[in-house]
Image 1 (tube, rainbow, N blue to C red):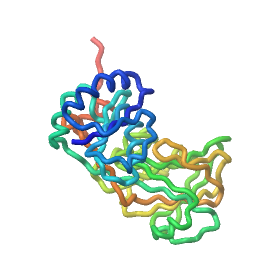
Image 2 (tube, helix red, strand yellow):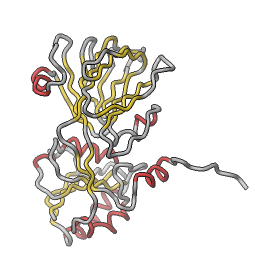
Image 3 (cartoon, helix red, strand yellow):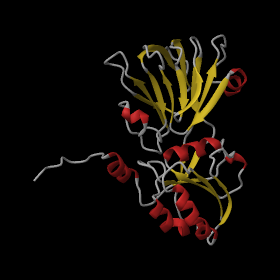
Length: 291
């Protein structure tokens, strides 16, 4: 098996682990390269699997740099949560032989594609070719696309439409459009629901809406979502997977659709979804009594 390693040395213990593991891994697989700058264009890397050593952020960045290439990703968590990077360092050492033998499960995770259209453009947002021609910028995300109010932090006004259906006005601090993979991230903190990873859906979650009745909604991933920036601040920004994509001006539209390419994640068979929710997010935890 050919392995490529993406390591984030800013995470504690990543550099020592990489130094310790390299010779050991080379006895079991062919290591075709090591990226410690987290800048390699992974779509050009020829490997059977890519190891992301760091945390969820390292794995998310690697997923974006694959640019649709279907090389499986395995995340080893050296951070705090490690929800997507589901292997601990000990798990990885124990499971490397299973990886090289092809015995580890692989899941397909949907990604989203965000396109920003200038205010003057009036193309059909459901037409992928038209979007590609007219957008001024675009990005992809595994977790979420987020529009935030930004400085000077006044409320903004957004108009949301799904597949051309009549718009819904959102007054508040912005909106999150999350995938199932990202439903346990910012979406969850903002009051959105947890969506099982295999569900073909998006979640639209308002951020601090100026309405008690504006609740998160789960919709089919077949929908194309168009969000018009009706009234924004100078600092209103589109973020994809926590990385700044672009500032937004009044009248511009952010069009979000399912990416034509999913990401393939190598899963830890010892960390099922319910177990991860219980252990990492304290889901369904019982009361703690003091004796």
